[in-house]
Length: 294
Image (tube, rainbow, N blue to C red):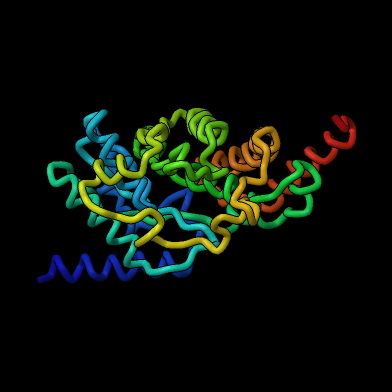
């Protein structure tokens, strides 16, 4: 009875983190990740962090475990500033993973994030992003953020890999934050810090294959938190309205440098001035544009 109560209490506390969204990148609070448990994780040689989001993240964990022999999976949910929906969907995603992989130890869920970091990348300098890069969407910077915020934890645990569910196509549906150029950048960014971003379903384009991996019916986009900006980069005709050349410039010149500066500070156990970092880098981007119009 006591064990169940502790589990319920921890779940309630995690739901409050989901609601209040504090700064938790540099180091999750002690109650969420006790030092004794952190030490135990560091001794494991078959541990991987697994993104907890929706259906594809769970399928990625299943596929990665089959390919790479992970015996211990640490589920980590990362919040943004734009989500809505029930916390129970996050918990149920972990339950689905546990039921699908009974032979693998699924460790207690961690919750991390930084709305201030998200805002610096995606919300504060929208006019400048449009002027400098010819487009704006929060989705590309958001996915970079989602991968970046797990890097300090991966380093803390001994450079363990991070499994995520990015896919280049969803039965013909293209997402600007999952085009090949974006996926390649996420991998390179993680590698900058010596962390492997394991994307085992990136080339699986048919939704039916995802259903087969999960061995259960889970409709795409359902039973997971939603985002107020979902689909914002698509024209009314359904076409993606952003060119990949613009996207690449955005990553290389702004989002990547901002994220690298923020994560570097977190690795030093510092909470940086996210907006100042983004402003300084944006100023350099604007100066470069004015000096070289091409």
